[in-house]
Length: 298
Image: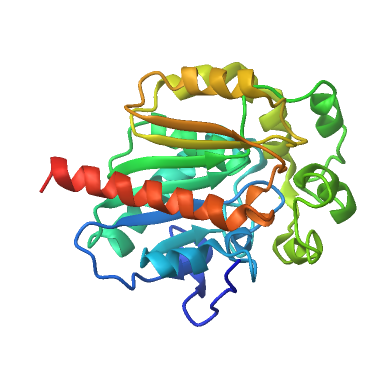
């Protein structure tokens, strides 16, 4: 994989809308390029997309694509939502409004926004996409989210300590975030721990408690192209070819869906040996969305 380039990536405590995060400017000057906004999952900060050696920012720099990766509410130096709003819907309502500011500040020279999102961030981004935002959304590239979680997960998350934030020990995270030995390099999972963070408990409980009841409705409302990948050894979701097909079928109003089960990898595809290829696929999808938008709206 390509090494991270710390000169290009800027960390900003006030990125937009009360959110901290990371920003990398365009290096291409292309007339029709996307603005990627990368939305991290639970128990990780925006650094998830900028781990040295596994950085999507580095891949995007080669494409010349600008990237924003905010820390979601309750992470990094971002605002903290009330516990009652630290849910999937609460995060989506906040992010939808904040991304309007992001578009005004960073996106006016681009063709539109492509959301690249992982895990809980993917579920939140799906909700945002289905609400038809008033800023130009061109596409959605998601991973690490599915239709159903394994039996017992709901009870396990509900039993977490009664605090606003909870810490999931790294050793436990590694068991569910990674695939089998040999699917990731020797520096992993340790290298990923730089992105670890405490997570608002409400969002962890929500993803296993209510998501399976709303995912089909949420997916049916999405009307932009979707790129979807799910790892074969994802420990947080029930995963097989049937589940991936069911997820794709639920996106029935999307004009185009590229959905595939990725063999031999776990939940955090970015951190596996196929991570660079996976990220390049997402970036190519984003470019395709921008070009198609330009063709429709020259």
